[in-house]
Image (cartoon, rainbow, N blue to C red; front, side):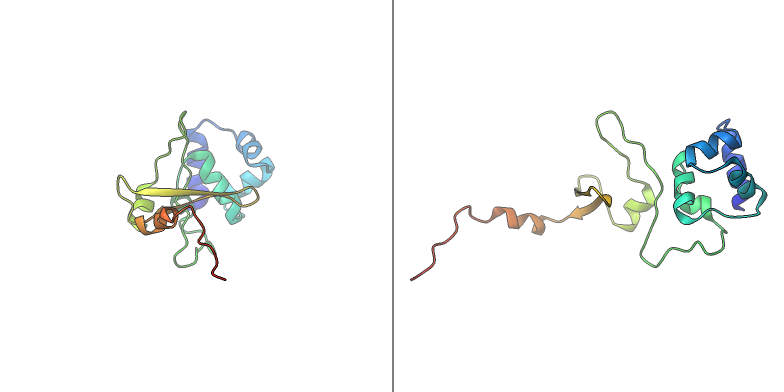
Length: 139
């Protein structure tokens, strides 16, 4: 049950309800209601909670009514970036998308929408192998 998971995670990190509330930008009373089972966080807050504790959203939100992701959509959890920008892609993500060591990933970014990654196939790079010259038009 979510309320029990949240309380266990919070206590295991040594956070008070007030500390967790500050990290999430909510009131202490809101955290208390979640832990008592009187209410549930919305999906964006559940994602933020998962990020604070470094757990997957799936493991945190098991059994929360109404928290179903559409088919083909995933929340694999939060990862921590290392000093040199490296990240570890969660195992479930690697399995779902067939990612193997040595695969090429393209990193995409939008200032308003965030960062995304996609697996790149060799065929996608053929666009860059095109000649630099533009053919002249025939008269």
